[in-house]
Image (tube, rainbow, N blue to C red; front, side, top):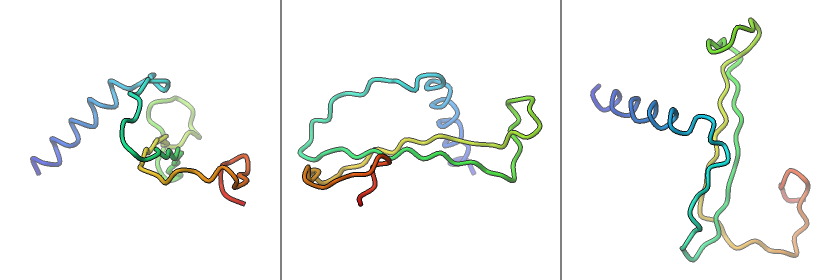
Length: 85
C-alpha cells in the first residue's frame, strides 16, 4: 500500500511540473539506435471530467511514449498519420 502511495505522489508531482510544458526540450539521444515516438490520446467515456464545468466533458489524457527503434527505411512510403502503406 505504501508503494502505491509513493507512486501516486511521484506521478502527481511529475504531472504538476510538466503541466503546460507540452514543448519541453529533451536532450539529444546519445545511443546507437533511433528513437521512436507514439502519441496516444485516451478518453474514458464513462468518467466525467471534474476539472471543467462543461457537463459533457469526459476524462482524457494525452501520453507521449519514446522507445528505441530501428533505423527508418527511407525508401518506404508513409501515409500522413505515419503508418506504413
